[in-house]
Length: 101
Image (cartoon, rainbow, N blue to C red; front, side):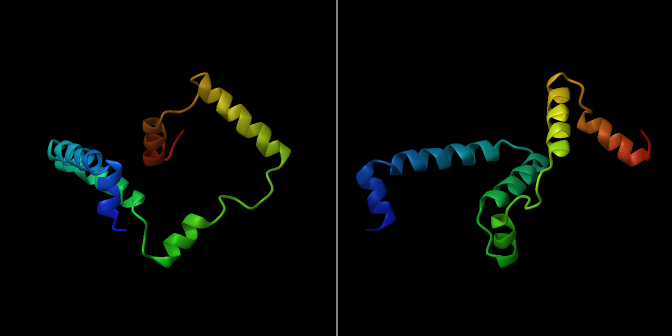
């Protein structure tokens, strides 16, 4: 059964159309710089035809065992961030550009 017929029977056609219309309306109101950001995000949502990208996307995140020491350090880092002790991205960028701490 064609997809459009299924949408019509299930009453989904109007919802999909209005969602697309809303997205188009929002896109029309963005600056060129913001559109570039949105385009990059959308590219990440669209399935890639590149077999390497598909392979990498399906690969496990990490296959090395996570030792207790790493788990402890990770937990400490998360807690420090929750307490507001993390380093803001802007500061990390500044340090990277200047080569200093």
